[in-house]
Length: 522
Image 1 (cartoon, rainbow, N blue to C red):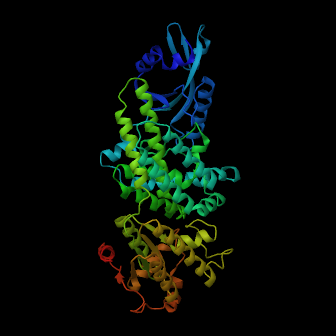
Image 2 (tube, rainbow, N blue to C red; image 1 turned 60 degrees about the horizontal axis):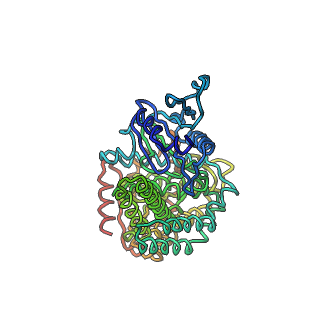
Image 3 (cartoon, rainbow, N blue to C red; image 1 turned 90 degrees about the vertical axis):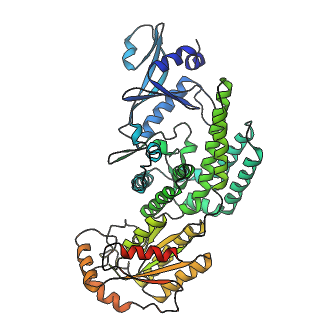
């Protein structure tokens, strides 16, 4: 019996099914026992992956173990050999000492996860919430921050490399039967138009450290929420080129999956939290393109699966329909979103504007850009590090403030250009700062809703005293309050077309309700 017969013949498949329930994909079989999962790679060469020899499969099993321990260290346990004798198959190193056994393959051994904890299952049960996505966002931001990057990796996010991947997808689709040619040709043209138009951004991202050794397959079915732990499994191990890329490419698989399952609200909540935690608002410019790219890859994989099913004499219609659905989604991803809004939140320290901003973000699934975090990132520190002491004595100078507001507006421009609403949380103490926000709205042709927050003096001082008791994104303290009030340039009636003066003194939710109504009317 040769290798192909071992892996695809009746004897092996019969043994496989005797070990537990079996999940089959275009590239592997996964056997589920009571507390373990065993993954065997198929002896196939699909061009973009090559498992055609036992040695190649072993190497990929070892890579799968190593790479997946980055995001799921408690899940990926070992790589174990599979032996064959006259009486059948034996899995595990303990079989080495037995005579007459032939090494025929390897399997990745994993701790079996509860299906009820899977994001896919939670969504189907109506239990996946924004809080889950925010926890996942924090996990992925930390993962990407620590992931390797550098000159060699940056090439994978370059204009040339991304273009190669795009064209390779359509080269494969062109060779597959039963796909609507008009649909994928229109999609190819749309992706290449976007790609050519944003070429300088792709290059800037590649040179700016945004190309990482990521996950590569961040789908809902690969994410689990085990009590307080977020576990992400099944990254790409078989082709580094599919795992290396812009962080926006990594994230787009998940947002594409959420939109496919009619939860664009959760996709936007996830993106908003990623941007807020990472400070990377350029993700908004690229994510629709990368969602389209990811959906195209899924269309390609489904079409390949249909080919395999047909070759085995099985029903390929569901796989073909899935492929066509992904092609439709890929084209839709590049269409414009609804008309966005620019929401400005101004007010002195402890006026309640950040609380209102969070509430509006939840209500409208919109990104929040706050000046406190932006200023700190300009000085190379995390948002919870104070800039009051040396060596940051210039952090609140006029020049530093100007650069902070310039950066805030640049981030807002990226979000608006993607067709999404954005919330800008800053003091906007001067007419010049407010005028710059008005000019951004005019340039992007979007309505501006401006909310000026305030509170009674006793409430503000109480909030500032509580703030001083622990770490805070804001460095504003009670000792600065009178000086900041003295420097405030009051808002004139002629400055803003849509202005709400919002008193947040009473923290009972009414101020937020008022703000939501105001934005809805804009």
